[in-house]
Length: 141
Image (cartoon, rainbow, N blue to C red; front, side, top):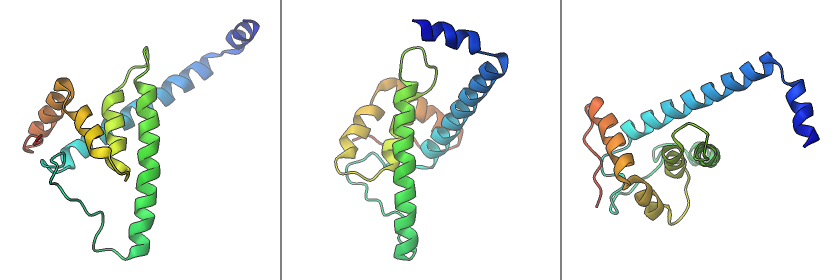
């Protein structure tokens, strides 16, 4: 309990503003990344018969480097989404987790993505965003 008192006394306005700034920056980045990906993915992305090939026309060393970077970024987004899902932390936690799942390459991720995307509020929000940018709604089978 004493460490809380010491921490509180050491807290300055500059530290508070830095924390708020980092939070707002990460929240804005999360919203922007979610919006871009949800608008850019094909409408049939969550369909069971969708087949994807990441950068098929690039040399193997560029493709594998991009896959590794994409997977690291996906894991980061999943961790960020879990943090944003905690009570008292504002943000789009579920959509950030979904974005991270879309980015990583692991077997069996499709059913988990489908469970998240089929939530009525999530699907409605994504389709509303897609409609705003003249994209067809997501096809869920």
